[in-house]
Length: 296
Image (cartoon, rainbow, N blue to C red; front, side, top):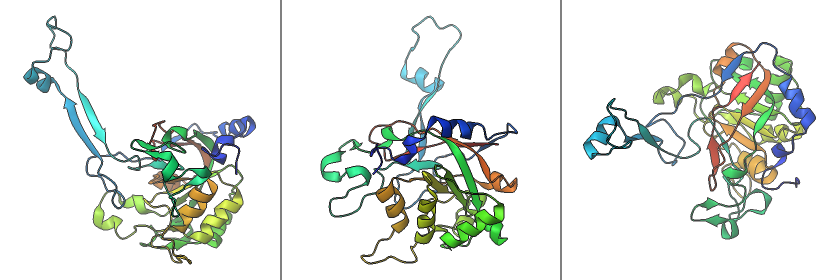
C-alpha cells in the first residue's frame, strides 16, 4: 500500500516529475477535455439528474420586495444566482477512492468501509476532499483511429494487447506516473441519445486494466460514462459486474476519469501532452466534476 492510503500513488508525484511534465508543451496550444453540462444531460444509470435552476433574478428580487443594497439604488442594480444540483459524476469527472465499494463490509481502498467511514453527509475516508491535483504527462490511446473506424460499437471490449498495439502504432510509450486516456469515439455523438446508444459502454476489459497497472499509471480514463466495457465479458467467480473498477480503483487506488472529451486531440493526432485536472475539494463527495485541459 502507498504511504498515503487516502489519496493513492497519484499524490506521490515527485517535484522532478512535475517539472518534467510542465516542460512538455512546445506549441502553447490548449485543448478543453470537457463538454458543457446542462439540465437533463445524459448520465449513467441511476445517477441523480443534473439541473440548473435560478434562485435569484432581477425580476424575482423585485417581486419579493428584496432590497439587497437598501433603498439607495437609483440605477436598478440587480443580480442573478443559481442552484446547481447533481452528482459529482456529471460530465467530465474523476472518481474518488470512496466511489466504489465491495464485499460484505462495503469497503474501499485504504481501509475505508461503510460501517466506520460513511456518515449521513458522505464518506469520511478517501472522499472528494482528498482528491489530489493532476498535473502530469498524459497519453491518448486512440482505439477507433487505430482500427480505422469513427467510433467503437456499443459494448465493445478493448484488450490489453490492443492497447499495447495502439501505443506502438502511435509511437508513444506509457511511463510510470502517467495518465492514460482511451478514446472510444462515444462523445463524437454527444448529446444525441439514439446515436450515443450505438456506441455506449465500449471500453477496456480486465486484461486492459492489468496492462495499465503494469505500466505504472496513476490514473486512466476514457470518453465513456463507465470507463470499462459493459457488460463485463468475463464476470469471474464469484461474479463481479465491474472487475476493472475493482482492480484499478478499489484494489490499487488508480483514479478513473470518465466522460473526457478526446475528439479534438484525436483529430489533431495529439498523443502526448501535459494534462491538468484540478478536482473540487468537497467533503463527503464521491468524485469531482472537472474541466480538464491538455496543453501541447
